[in-house]
Image (cartoon, rainbow, N blue to C red; front, side, top):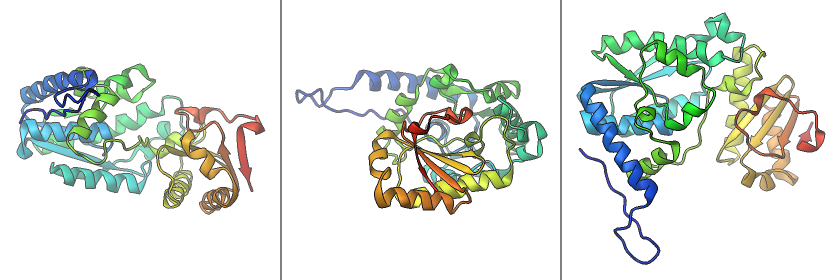
Length: 301
C-alpha cells in the first residue's frame, strides 16, 4: 500500500496544492517504504510515541501484519500511563504486540544516573528485545529515532548501533515535523502528542535513580494531567522540591489563584514538600541545573 497524499489549499482556492514540507515528507516516506520492503520482516522497539507509532503504521502498510511486530518494554522507568498508551496505539494500528519487562534499574551503572545514563538503559533494552525478536522470527530490529535526533545528545543511540538496531526514519531523513505531518495525513489522533521521555530524565544527573523517586515524579505528573494540563509537562525532582515545567502558553492559566493552589496541592500529594512553577516554561534538558534565581519560579509550600 503506497503513501497517502494530503492535499490542502494554497490560499487561492487551488485544492490540489501540496505544501513543500508535505511533498518532501511524501518522498522520504516512499524511500522508507522501499527500505522496509527490502527487509521483508521488521520488529520495532515500540514506545507508542509519535515516531515509533508512525514507523509501525508504515511498516504495517508495507509488509502486512504477519511480517510486522511491535515489542513494548515495560519498566519502572516509564510511566504506567505511557506504557498503556503504547499498547493502545499498537492495537489501533493493528500491529501484533509482544510486551516484556526490562530491568535497567538492576544495572548499577544506570541507577547511578551518570550523564550517559541512557546508554546503559538502551543497552539493557536492546539486549532484552533482540532475543525476543529472533524468537518470533525477526532479524531486523528497528527504533523510532528520527533525523532531528541525530543532532541531539543521545548516548542511547550508541547502544542501539552496538546491538545492530537500525533507525530507518533517521536513515531516510524524516524529521519530527515531517513525521507529525505524515501521521496527521493518516488521520491518526496522536499526531501532535508531546514527547514523554523516561521518568529518569526528571532527575538531575548524579541523583540515583530509585523506584521511589520515579514513582514520585509519575504520581505528580499524573495528578497534573488529571487537573487538565496538556502539552509538554515535566516535574523535575530536586529532593524535597518538585519543579514544574509547562508550555509557556499554559503558564498564565496555572501561575495564579486557585489554579496555582491546585497545582501545588497535586504535586505535594505525590510527596514533594516544596513546589515551584518555572516561569520560563518547559525547556528540554533543563534537569541538570537547579537555578538559584528565585525570580525565575513561583513557589508554593
